[in-house]
Image 1 (cartoon, rainbow, N blue to C red):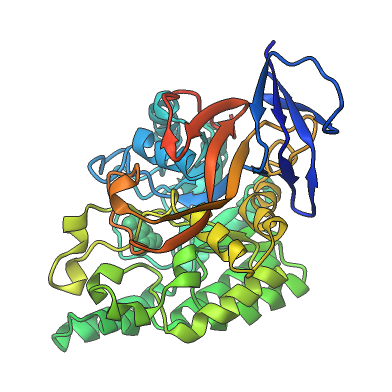
Image 2: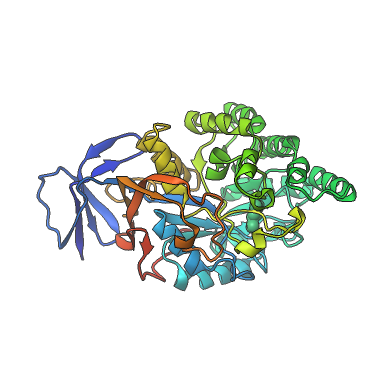
Length: 447
Ligand code: DOR
């Protein structure tokens, strides 16, 4: 078996940063060594001056296959992940067909496997039709379930409250977490019809449709159903400061609820319309006013929001550039830019590297049953590691991203601190911001 020593770096965990070498045997961390501690190694990576972090775990990406391969494929999406320091991704079920049956879960995993550069999980769709098949979908390899409480997509419809409650009863028994797009569909649909009837097609109408109360209500309802049933839930892409106290309240009541937010809700707002066409900024849930970012940061740092995901939603630039806001494809690519953008925040003094690791990897691994295999730098854990150069500076450039749908809203953002090498289970899958040839190395974490 090969033995790889990563020598001379600073190891960063969720609670500390310290000088140490890492010994990797095969796919796992074998030992954490003092700098001069001897060990048999067949290869050494010089990490002098670098920090070594657990690879990021992004529990919210859309890789678009089957159905929309021009926006992203499993190969292009996992290359982007590798280049961005992300070693595990969970992929969403709003493909075509949706990942809504045991067979479609199995088919997606079979399709993803030979393309994947990083480890992955596949979400099963929680719908009225999938309700009788949740256990079979888990058996087919689903890592978790996705529930669209806010949906205008006929392939991923919002189930009735009756079905959601029954699903939560079933999922409490199965033990898998459900990630929830928490918006109230009847409110969204009602407002959309009103706004369209009034001839509105501007960016502000998007926010008026996705009113704060639609997010708050769905978050509270989901938390209440989770408390009632014992189901584990995860609030996706938190964008609204008014939901934060309700998540904290549910946690205080003992609900098994976790939450994520994304770089675009922390770093962008409606004020970015001064910089980019408003319609380009369309994303669901929406970018809200600038007053939301600070409360989201506070919640991220005090633990109310547990983790950073990306809602990586690649679209082609032409799909983001349509004239009517209603026709513009919602969402942004994010899996490759998340770590660099957050490291820039570390460099700016917003948080420590350990704060970041807790929110980029440790908490996600714990919430979704991957811990201590992932999210931890310790003997026995998978050698999913990112070497980071905190002195390195750069800029976000759409043209250098690996995603097919590379229409980033962060073009030109200054970066300070970059991932320079990504290892997945001991194998280097990206170097200096470029993915290496490692298709097929990724594994389904729920296998
Ligand atoms: O803006 C979004 N885009 N929000 C979602 O929930 C889905 C995503 C997509 O798939 O494009």
